[in-house]
Image (cartoon, rainbow, N blue to C red; front, side, top):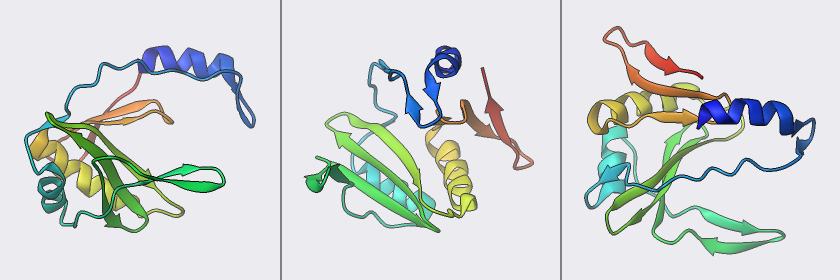
Length: 142
């Protein structure tokens, strides 16, 4: 899908936005299976589970994501997602202003080693697929 995104972005990205949106049609599957997943992931990254993300509906707050959670990693870096009956179909990262990137790198290394998770960076159009024995991160780009 990243191969499709690159030419789409070139044709549709404008200085302040987009001519039209890129719709990602993804058949959702659990990226992590089992129960009590947020607690398990938080323990892997040395953090605690916090409240679900807030859904914003300008100009007010619409509520919290159903079955959602956040895992603050510190340094303005947060993992967030939601559970369903089969597992965890969504896990994402949010980087705030001046994030401590190392916190996400460390979390990725642990989650990749224990759960086999990869990280898709749509904005930079790359995949972090794993960590080498020497600590370097394997990257794939279209």
